[in-house]
Length: 391
Image (cartoon, rainbow, N blue to C red; front, side, top):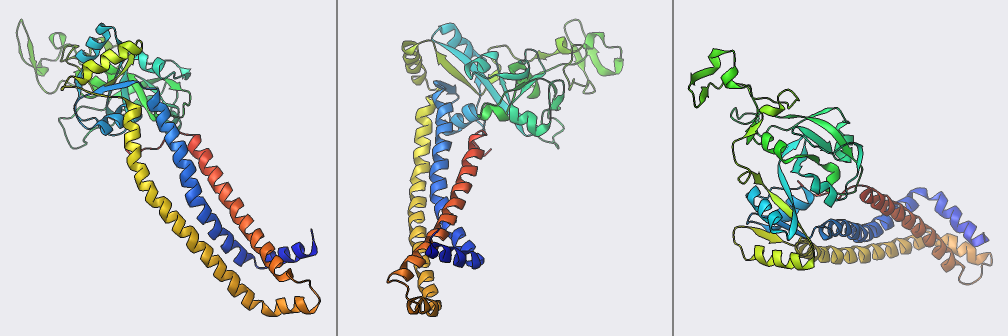
């Protein structure tokens, strides 16, 4: 270390408060634009990665953005529902493998996604412990859901009640946790996966109760005839599906009429995908979207807003630079006697300029190191978890 560098270091170290404030200001100016640029890039890559892996999504007519967020990222409400008949028709058509999704409810604040085993194969999800849900009333937790709730295989999870003050609403359903997924860094980490039939039970489309024609309590019956039985409201529906009552659960609709909110269509090949897209786009009673196209259209609106933020960042950077120049000028005015002393003791010409440059270089370096640390922590945090999206 040269004598001039030692002198600059002693000055910077002595004035700790001034150095810390300047370094913090520099760090903030650097962090905001750099972090926003890098985080938006990571955020976009994660969003596009999931959308790219999803060839087609089909739902009821409505907002394409709502359908995209609902079916791909498990956020929001898709609005109207489709019937399972659409899934059956696509499957029988042989052009694509449909993966149905029914998402209307939550459990402990986490989305309950009703689907089939094809979804886990399609998303290439790995089970860390336990197994996939194969029967009515079984649940598979995402890694973040299991960690947040402190649940593991063998525990129970309760669905959320839609309205605590609505006595006509269905009872919450207690489900058995049969598996936990390995972390995937996607929306699947924060979900609760169940069989489609389980979600229909949660919605009240299906239920189970004692067989009324064999009940031993006559007070539960209003009338009993050969063709049917009329019961009172005192008949309590099961709120937990067990081996003893699983066979009693039934649905008040045919397979074709049971609802789904969307389904993913995985074409057999490129030609089949083209044919299926043309057929579905010609219909007015369903909505077809290609997720990556819809996502890029949505993100283009976000990036228009980002341009204003970039312009604001430039203005802030210029303002901070002018402020630093003013601080340096005032500092030199305050230190005039010190600088004159350096000249009187024979310091070479330009020593004052080099000394000030070294001091500011050290201060700026501290600010840049602080900014790099903050940006690195933010990137590691974002990359270690799924994309955050508002509910």
